[in-house]
Length: 139
Image (cartoon, rainbow, N blue to C red; front, side):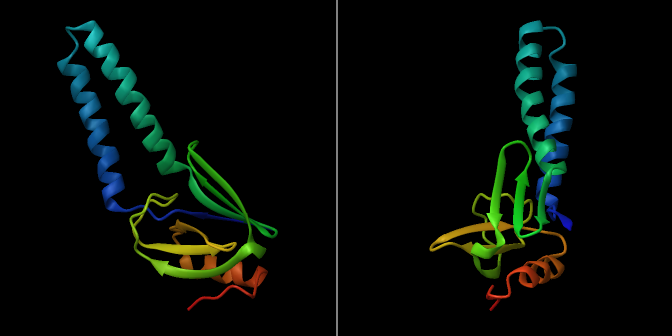
């Protein structure tokens, strides 16, 4: 059984993607008379926008058998055995993590490791994890 949970996306992330794409298109029109400036702009902004959109469309959390697969674009991937998870709490931390929203859950695993993620359907996600590992604490 495999369940995929997409990340919740905050308005700030969507706004950033839209703003950068509009800036990129605008700069193409403004720099069309200078080839080198246009080339540098297309390469640098194009790569940045491609990475942002890849993260937007490919940030998800997959539960397959007894393993949690966390993916955030091509930049970040983690495989976490669900048996290692000790606690799940709600959190609004802005620490860098594979989450596109500030409304997150904190997953504690191992002795002192933690990761922040933001599945859209948090309650179903937590219920599924707890059905696989009933030892998970949810204060």
